[in-house]
Image 1: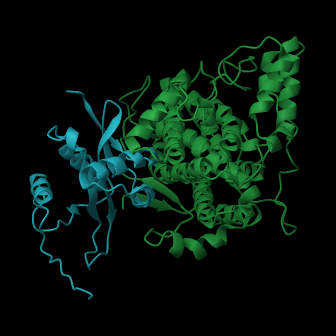
Image 2 (image 1 turned 180 degrees about the vertical axis):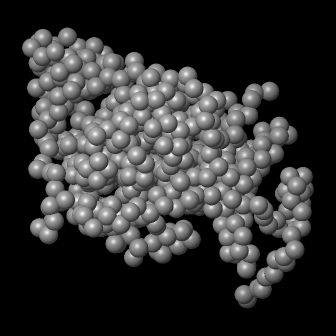
Image 3 (image 1 turned 30 degrees about the horizontal axis):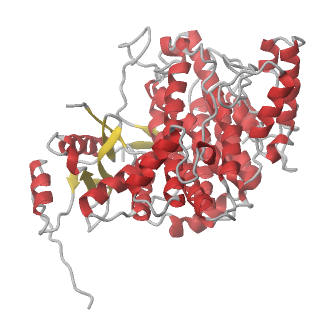
Amino acid sequence: MADVRIRPVNELDIEAICRIDERITGTYRPDMWEDRVVYFIRRDPDSSQVAEVDGKVVGFMLGEVRGGEFGMEEPTGWLEFFGVDPSARERGIGRGLTDALLAGFKRRGAHVARTMVRTQDADIARFVAAMGFTPAPVSALEKRLG
Amino acid sequence: MSDQIHMLPKAYHEAVEHWQRHNFPEFPELSKRWQQYFPKDEEFCLCARIEQGMPGEIQVGDKKGQPKAAVPSELDKEAAEQLLMIVRAQASTEFGSIQQHHGTFERANDPHDQTWVLRVMAEELRHGYQMIHLLTSADWSSVTDTKPQDMVEEILSMQTGSHVLAAFNLEYDSFGDSIVFAAFIDRVGKYQLTMQKVNAYAPMAASMPPMLREEAFHLAAGVIPMRRWMEAAASDRNATMDVSTIQKMVAKWYGRGLEMFGDERGGQTNVKLGLKDMANRQAQDLYIEECTKMLDDLNIRFVRARLAHLSREQADSAYERVKAGDTVEAVSRDDLLRLPDRRFFRRRGEPAFQLVGFDGEEFTDVEAYIAHVLKHLPEAYRASIDVKHWIEMQRKVSSGELELKKAISSMPRLARSGGACPCSKSVRWVMDS
């Protein structure tokens, strides 16, 4: 099996991230990913990561350190988007990306990382649980707006 | 966050602000546009940012494993001298690029791209501020007689034409140069800053990560608009930027970017002294590889837009065939962007003044070579003193009338009157308190 290289995201990864998302969701969303990736590049390019196999990007994980949300003042690393190409799964790529992302958060002064998972996304819930995330003492609430 | 914030002493801080008012009058516009374009981003701060928790031991070179220097006098004399040169050159590039962007800022036709460039300019100002912090927060008397205030004066007095590196002495022909410059020249900046993250002088190493985080956006501010240009060029026959125009801007900047790494045969001393972790050619090779990847990204956008009836997989495969020399549905290699040969139109380094063409072809007739280079350069740039000077030097070197070494160190007479603030109320940038 080829070596997996984990490295910080850059502007030349946008297209590869779009294609991974397309393979997962079936939707090609170049403008949305351009906005999102550049946002994380502006905010915290050291923390957000991509995984390469043979020079090809096969996974990504985007997040940033921020504080003050929902009254939680301490710097917190937020894991927001990730994806691994279906053809590259079961190689520890998700774990490698998570380790690198969390290390970036720690370097930037965060002592806690948080994320949110929709209850119907069982696979994602299993993945983040396997990465050591446990239920947080906060509740996610919503209200339908008609 | 893990950055430590430092402000310059009042006299230097005011000097930088004074410089900004003369050279970067657009700066106040940034705070007006911030909420619209960067609503969730932390407000811009004109300050020096120092990363915390950096390695305390030298990472490369002869003194690997020994503690990093906290002050210049703890470095060997040679290392301190080299470092001082690097810091001054770095400062010069930061302020120089703002002066270049300023020249065409008002001529931008896209407010989004213009605002991104505005942020880039502000962050370059911060990087310059950071370099001045390095020069003024330590005692450099072990390697220079120049006083800190005079070093700051020297940096703030430079104008386009008197900067340390050639890339910062070229005027922009249009706002398009702002974009291509960010994609190609800021990319060299990324390599230089990355190499200096290991610097044996701890404050220099700790200055790099915060600058690199901002540099990552500068590259995006170059590549993203170029992606859109290429899509528009493929689908709109009246697009304002066509591939040929973009290609000529690439030819204008790429060689200057390569030269920013220094002579291909050098750089080992900096590695030995623990100031950088790569020699010049090694870093330049990686840069070329990355520029190639960038052009693939741009060209794929073009092919997909031109052959919009194909699926993405089919279009990507069509691009691979075109790149290999085939013509696919009337799209050929000549319709796409290409990187010039690394020896093309070079004035510094190993291939300086060699007669090597865009595709690596060799010329024996200097006039044919000059015509070949001119054909690949933007029309407005061809009319510049920079190109005129190159032609004179190229002719003289080729005829044996001028020694190569002299041609390499020769600069066109671009330098404007400098050395003092143009403001009638003062004669120096740094005012005595």
